[in-house]
Length: 210
Length: 210
DNA sequence: ATAAAATAGTTGCAATTGCAACAGACAATT
DNA sequence: AATTGTCTGTTGCAATTGCAACTATTTTAT
Figure 1 (cartoon, rainbow over the protein chains, first blue to last red):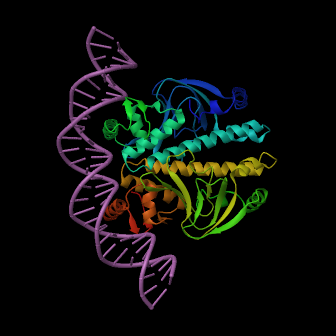
Figure 2 (cartoon, rainbow over the protein chains, first blue to last red):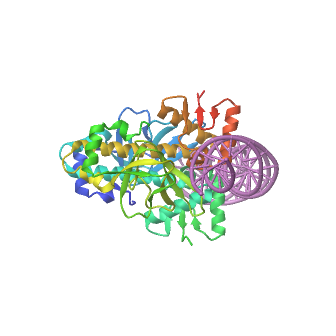
Figure 3 (spheres, rainbow over the protein chains, first blue to last red):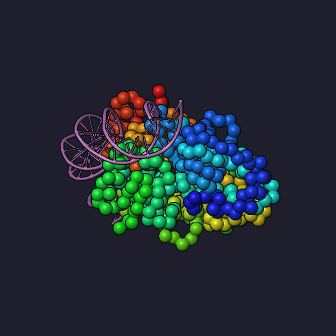
């Protein structure tokens, strides 16, 4: 759970109320299931109740990137996924998951009726998604693998509120999130360990940052 | 003007109405003026009426990146700028500009009063900004300079609705937007010209794409 | 009108990164 | 229990990219 979590920023009663209003449906997915495809006709969005989900992008030369990953409380799906794009996008379950699904357009229009709470929730959702997107840009603009790692680690520190944290995804997937070669990233992590910039045990990182 | 322009997607009367409601103020800036700093106390946002504006980021090792650029109709400022970040952000005028300024929080709360139009406008604004953000990620995840250029050119084609288009910023600034070295980018553009993938005359590009 | 600054374009060389190909550890499947 | 697959960790080598340095051209400022 992190500060971008809807389940953190919206109280449980409001969440239940809006779920009913939107006739939301909770579904389970197994590890490696494709939850959504770009070509899907529906405009579903989902909130992660349990598990880990990734939005991945495949370029025409087959390079995979992770555009974002979603932990408990994150929202994903149509409207939160690039549409006019050059690359193919999929949302896949990295672990067995539980997801609350509902319609994006209903989420966005429901609130024209009468319910002020829903507007607040929509704002929270969109702003949070936007901030996460900007965080990713901040990371990707780093000109070297080391800079990308450091920027990522700084954000993780802030998100988790601690110098020590677990990277939520595998190191392979982290490389795809940073858009760099995995082995080159491992090499850089090793260097940073040797220079005492970080302590790293697999995906457990301690970054004191000067 | 592009498809993300507010001045395209919202009619002039509504825009005037909401401007009054928000006591918006129109100001001019000269080329190279810093329009906003991250450290500014106010929560101003602006809509570009005339000119070109860039959101730039400076990392601790002095690397400059362009996070986004804003042409007529684009919205920028607090709420559309990374806040919790590692890098310093500035909004600067790349040309002499005219900008309509108003408060972000007033924009976001004004509509709790009574006006449904405003709610639509807010949605349009946020969704458009979000889509642009996602476009940038789509570009930055490219693993080579060529892939970044091709992805950027594809988006430009779609945005401008034409195989031929002018890059809105200088080639120097494009390199900063793609987060690559300028001379390396020039080298790659030259190669792509030689391979007849693009026609390039300075910032005028023709990209037929297969 | 002239000087200064910014942009475009180029290139050699060095550093970084990506690629390929491993091995070992761990998890999942049959 | 054995096998398959995924993830971590490593390394040599090649390709790409960044850096520095320079010229030419255009734009801006004095």
